[in-house]
Image 1 (cartoon, helix red, strand yellow):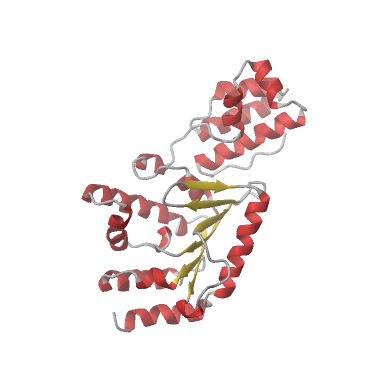
Image 2 (cartoon, rainbow, N blue to C red):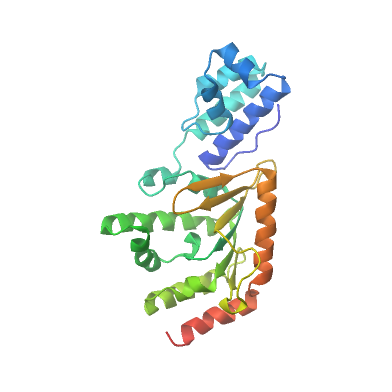
Length: 286
């Protein structure tokens, strides 16, 4: 059986690794999904949820049934059952189910590298509490307690940049208008100072796309491109719109967004020019 490298990962990543291994085992023994469902008397939707990592809480009995059907040995079955239990654990984000409506925080928590392009909001991993409070009404959040919950959840997310073991690397390309639309000058200055502080870290890079350059290569919807420590764990692209969220995993989709991000980086100000620009925003007229 292929090795399982998910130690230390978030439960979301472990669930994904478990599903991937179960697919590999089925393919190795030459069984189709229809054959599996017939042998185990399962509905096609049940197996599909398992293999697509859509199950909310991985079930040890189901994994054991699949291992027996696929002829997996006792030690490997035990390893998969252990991974199943770990995948059922509650990540910190589960206590913010009222804030997070998807599994993105679980993927983000296990990422080794995040590349993001933003045109409206400062990237969540770089936002200050005051900026979050200011921006909340623009997305329909007006209740003070609800705003506080969003601030707390965002602060928890940001810990991946400062964790002691393998802090996540962030490369953000941000449209200049994102900074200019912060109408509160005090909040804007504090937010920019925070970004300047963050880019002093070895694992954080920020580039600004200047409005003076007009239309630039790669322009379009905002996205987050996530990479993971395990080379066998496929990258993902996360798209967030006003209407829905999408998770892309197909190789051709990933390649398109990788090329697009490279183009955005090429069009944006370099590190030195970005620092100079941001410093000028603080020192210049509000």
